[in-house]
Structures are given as structure tokens and as C-alpha cells.
Amino acid sequence: MNSDTSSLATLAPTRAGKYLTFYLAGEEYGLEILKVSEIIGLQPITRVPRMPEFVRGVINLRGKVIPITDLRMKFGMGAEDSEDSCIIVVQMRGIQTGIVVDRVSEVVAIAEADIEDAPSFGSGIRTEFLLGIGKAGGRVKLLLDIDKVLATAEIAALQDAQAHAD
Image 1 (cartoon, rainbow, N blue to C red):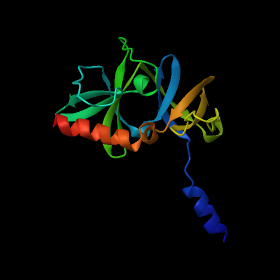
Image 2 (cartoon, rainbow, N blue to C red; image 1 turned 60 degrees about the vertical axis):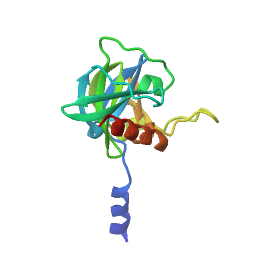
Image 3 (tube, one colour; image 1 turned 45 degrees about the vertical axis):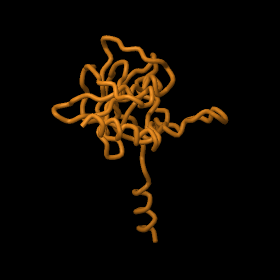
Image 4 (cartoon, rainbow, N blue to C red; image 1 turned 30 degrees about the vertical axis):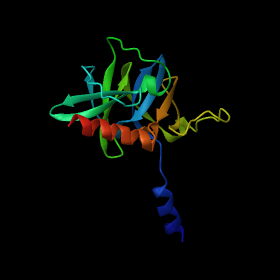
């Protein structure tokens, strides 16, 4: 019985690992490094009509059209590009997509003991897109679950943007 219990414990998801950290409106966020394909500079984005405001459009990345989401807009921070703004290309639920961030910081390893659950802010405040709050280098990082950042309807909008651009 002990071996069954220990094998179940190893199947439990862990939040420990390496995270690519980046900034949005002065706050530091983290994204599981295994979800990141690459980081590219901001480039011209083709707007696709009738998409949600936070879907900036699509880009041609080496012959493949990928949708681009502005995380500042998605999180209600307002659009604001700077010379440091860039696109992080991620794999999200089988879709390759880009997210616009203010600037990339570094890759950090965060132990499970240094990750706390997101606090409850009361009704009406959504935190399900947070894996947790990580502590590294004396700073707090909001760790995002990129698969939950966009809801199912929003993923469909990204797929539509990609299809209309092809």
C-alpha cells in the first residue's frame, strides 16, 4: 500500500520549476518556461476586424500566422508599447500564440516552498489564472497559468483570427 500512496504523490502537480519573468505596468509576472517557444521583438501587427480589443491581431512568424494578445489590455491596464515591449511566443492549449509584454526580465527557478496560493480578494475578483505567488530574489512574482489566462471563448477568437489571416 505504501508504494501505491507514494506513486500517487508523484502524480500531484507541482508548481516548482523555471519561470520566464516579465513586466506589465511595473509588476513582475512569471510564465512556465516550458510553455515559452521564443521571445521576439515587437513588430507590425495586422489587425483582424471584430476581434476582442485585447487581441491585437496577427503576425507572420517565419511563414506561420500567429495571433497576438496584449496582456496589458487583457488585464485592463490599457495599451502602452515602449521600446522594451516584446512578444513572448507561447504554446497555449495546442495553439501557438504571442503575448505582448512591457519587457522580459529573466529566467528564475522557484521552489514549491516559495510559491503560495493566490490570496482571495473577495467576490468579483478573478484569480483562477494565477498558478500562485512566487517569491524569488527578494521580490514577489505573479505566476500565470497561460492556459487559463484566456477563457475558452477567447481561445476561439484567437483561432478565428488565425483562420481569417491564412
